[in-house]
Image 1 (cartoon, rainbow, N blue to C red):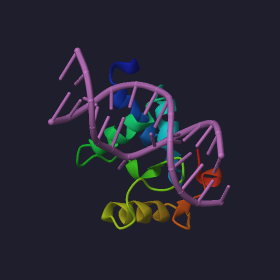
Image 2 (image 1 turned 135 degrees about the vertical axis):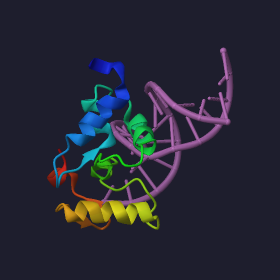
Image 3 (image 1 turned 120 degrees about the horizontal axis):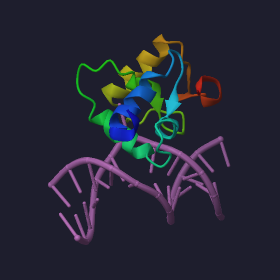
Image 4 (image 1 turned 90 degrees about the vertical axis):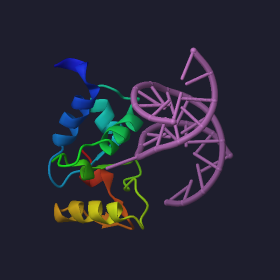
Length: 101
DNA sequence: ACGTTGACCTTCG
DNA sequence: TCGAAGGCCAACG
C-alpha cells in the first residue's frame, strides 16, 4: 500500500472519521500524508464516484462551515446528514473545538 | 509545456 | 471577531 494512490489514502482517512465527528480538509490531507494538499482533497471528493459510501459530508473547511453555497441543495443535504449524526450547527457553523477530530 | 482553476489554509490589519 | 491577501499544489484545457 503506501502512497501508490494518494487518492485511495484520502478515502481511507475520510472513511476513518467516526460518526458524529467532523474533520477539515487540512486535517484529512495531513492524515493522508500530504499537509499541503488540502485543496486536492476537495478535488478528490468532487471526483468521487456515485454510489460511494464514503462519508464525504463529514469533511468541512477550516472555518467549520460547509464548502457549498447555502442556497445549494448539496449544502442542506450535507447539513442534514451531519445533524442526523448529532453534529450541532450554530449560526451555520460547527464548533470544531467540540466535534473536531 | 504554460496558464488557469479549485468542495483550501494561514497570516495580517 | 470579521475581512482581505498571499501561499500551496495537483488537475485541466
